Image (cartoon, rainbow, N blue to C red; front, side, top):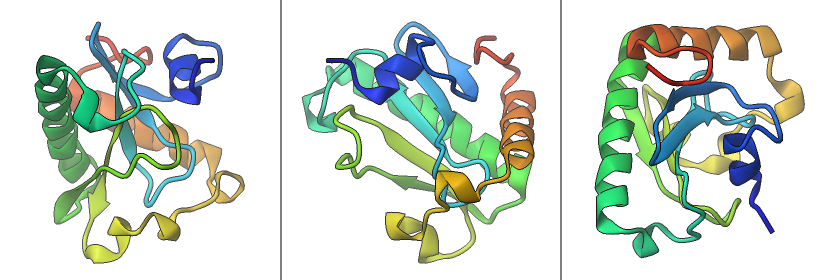
Length: 140
């Protein structure tokens, strides 16, 4: 059975894409640490990051770094947080988020989907796409 991330990547459920190519997709999480919290997800459905093909892992990290720079520019944060957990969805993914302190490194500090403002989520995605030079589908 497909993961929720595969369903987003395949367009079966909506996602706010900020980047996409044949190997990885990046979209906003519906339960962010802060507006702009992005997930970098391999298209291939692999549960653990340690099981990813090395080339896919390297590419996912290159994309995460590019998104991290966009996060800092778009949201004026001191740093871009980077986190791998993997327990919430069995599909490898990297969390990249605006960080001004260590509070974002606990996924217990997330905003629930019902507590986010859809207009702010859309604006955050638009800011990141502007920084990355991508369209609404995440492609350049």
